[in-house]
Image 1 (cartoon, rainbow, N blue to C red):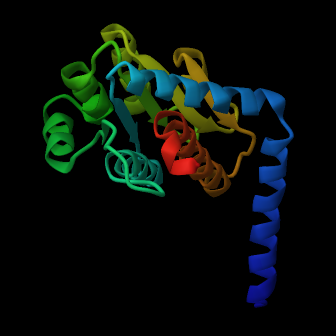
Image 2: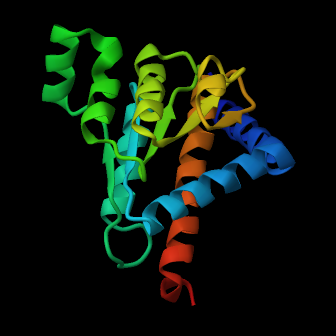
Length: 196
């Protein structure tokens, strides 16, 4: 087995997908819209509620900690929480079903100035879809990070960012790039002194 070729093949795939995103004006427009929604949210005193399953849950945790902690430089914390804390998840899964783990938290925590972000590579995770529906009931803006065809979530969310790939790990790699760039755009807008 030639491990170097595996590495080269994977990096080439990632490079080609990045190029595809970089040269797609519709894709770039939706990512810019994501940045603007989050900037408006924080300016109005709102919070980010973000969720996903498996690797996407890890991305949700990463997203929230970069905002409540720090990204590149010291600044005031921004309100963000990754939904799906273990005791809540097991409680709601047991009492209501796994498909309600995120919607119950959105109903309890969400407010009209907040933004909900659902991360699902297929666009069809029922618990994330239910989170979007709950966010709409609360009056929150909803944003989907997805891939493949966009799935059911692309019609439900206010803004859907669809990574143009059918490969789950490649989609997740672009999701984390989107998350980092959105965080940087928020920081540049709200804390411009850190980027002078």
